[in-house]
Image (cartoon, rainbow, N blue to C red; front, side, top):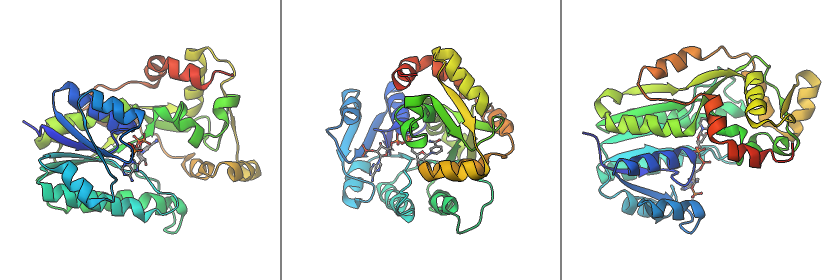
Length: 304
Ligand SMILES: NC(=O)c1ccc[n+]([C@@H]2O[C@H](COP(=O)([O-])OP(=O)(O)OC[C@H]3O[C@@H](n4cnc5c(N)ncnc54)[C@H](OP(=O)(O)O)[C@@H]3O)[C@@H](O)[C@H]2O)c1
């Protein structure tokens, strides 16, 4: 039997929220910390019985109080683009508080490994805290640990994330990609990251010392766009693909296109999706995700 009192990082966010709701549905005790206990997301968690503490991941005293008595931890942080090492520092602070509280099993949601890049490349620097935290977790001495490496969130293509990742696309319907139409996105529904984490917490021996790519299907970019257009019936959802000088110009408005350019020729991760299925966790395909979130897609793309 796994732990029944779990501290969930980022429960007011997407993957943490999914896990918090799933654990509450199992009747488990769930604790979290937020910078704003008055937010709508925090209030919604409170209404389903999650204990929501005021604080942040850099606040050791608040973390100690929130983690007291917890035997499970879902570690899930956010990158700080202006100060990348802060993500590692926060992670170490949360892990130290978890260790002091006697946590038995840590499930860390990291990210898929990037293709090899120069050490001083900004994506290497932004991604380094996740790799360093994976190492820190594996050597910290917790009785059980699991690393989940989720792929490309399906929810990146709908509000609110689409506004940050693809500025202007929700309003115009036009996506400017440095990907190729054939580049395969290793997709995952954030609800399914929650399912994987819940499975790991319920089956700690099986998931111990496992590093798992969490991918449900590899979807070519052009097919993802076509799926959104077809399921929503919004013909204005479309894509253009840029490279060379056009990419340089577009990257001035959206620096994340540089990362897309690096990933345009990554090999398919279809094998990762097949491997993930072996864990017996049911996952949604992108088309099912768009159908389920149809109301959110309609609201996001209401002008196109
Ligand atoms: N998008 C993708 O395709 C993708 C793929 C792989 C991995 N990831 C990783 O997924 C993570 C983001 O997960 P998500 O999308 O589920 O998050 P999200 O929806 O953006 O929510 C962020 C959460 O982090 C909390 N938070 C942020 N800073 C905090 C702090 N200093 N102290 C306490 N809580 C803090 C927020 O809580 P409050 O605001 O309530 O304080 C909120 O609950 C990132 O690490 C990202 O790199 C993303």
